[in-house]
Image 1 (cartoon, rainbow, N blue to C red):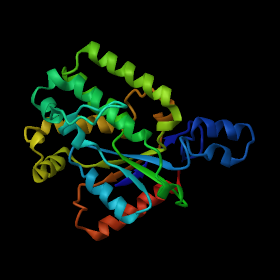
Image 2 (cartoon, rainbow, N blue to C red):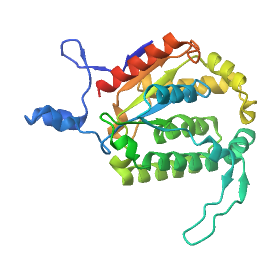
Image 3 (cartoon, rainbow, N blue to C red):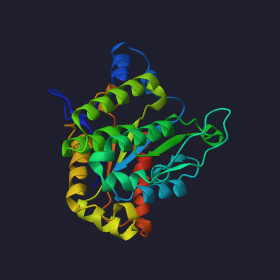
Image 4 (tube, helix red, strand yellow):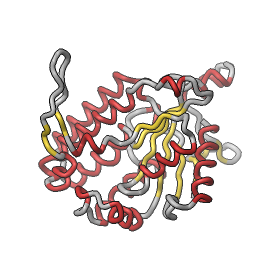
Length: 284
């Protein structure tokens, strides 16, 4: 199943896409349609791939890169989480001091390391979304930036879930949200996204793929945890019941792709997915 999120208008004929606020204002003011269609955050369409652990995001990113080589891809910085190092400051030599595998630490002792991990993962995602466009992308006729997860899923999926499980204390959750809100408001359009690509699969299928890829840090993950994350994704991106604090993404378009079938070695399935991604972008 692949779909785009729409919202019905009371008293209207049928179902129409809910337009962004500034496009509605443009239409109300009699301005040309192109006024509201400018890309927020610069000259490229910016989309985030969302989905459960081991749903197939990295495979999907590679497929996008192969199909659309002119697009710019930002992969999830897992390697940074596996080997946290001190950053060198200006004027200092590069440091190679390794502080450990934070990803493994949070899985082993979630109540001890959840706040540290979520703060670090949020900052790494924020840095990725602030990266400038490449020269190659700027020369592209229809430039597209793809992020493997985003600052929004960091908060509304993973940090939220850890708080609900009791691994984040209320004061830690409050501080995290305050930091998250402040920085996103400060950077504004520089980190704006135009939509989400949600890869949807059952928790059972994700667990099967998790075991297949065999990442050492994830060997203790249970089905129950994947079920919790699946519910968080559905509430945020499909049912729209998660409280979202940023108007510019509250009603952002969502492309939902059913990836329960293994598409990695299925050319026909790959072609269909890529065709529909391209069609989705044309609706933005």
